[in-house]
Length: 133
Image 1 (cartoon, rainbow, N blue to C red):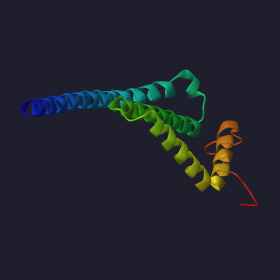
Image 2 (cartoon, rainbow, N blue to C red):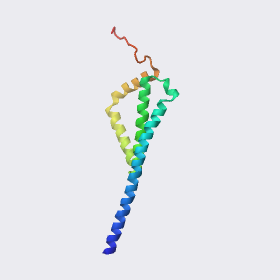
Image 3 (cartoon, rainbow, N blue to C red):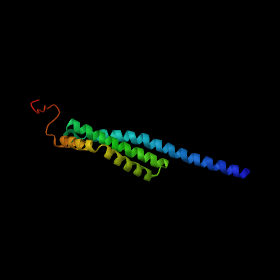
Image 4 (cartoon, rainbow, N blue to C red):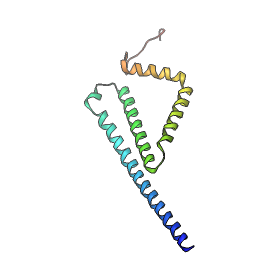
């Protein structure tokens, strides 16, 4: 009985230290990764090529880049903890389908807005006249 208790305590301590190491490593990856994502987004947006873009396009691209990098960091941290990657793939697929079905009509407006931002038939500060208004 005494050996069984010692073996149990050793297995609990071993599991606890493994879990603690994974948790600490995951938190380090999360904190450093989020700061690095913000830094990289700022550097990308401050580059010479981005200066030519309109303010609204730069803001949109900045948000897209930051959200994408943040999502990658969060998924990486979760994978370090030990959450299976298949769970994330299933979650993202299900969320994508659900959001796509819920926002069918809004996506056409979103696509139209992106086209306006890319082709810029008018810019910030311009006035548009339609139907005499």
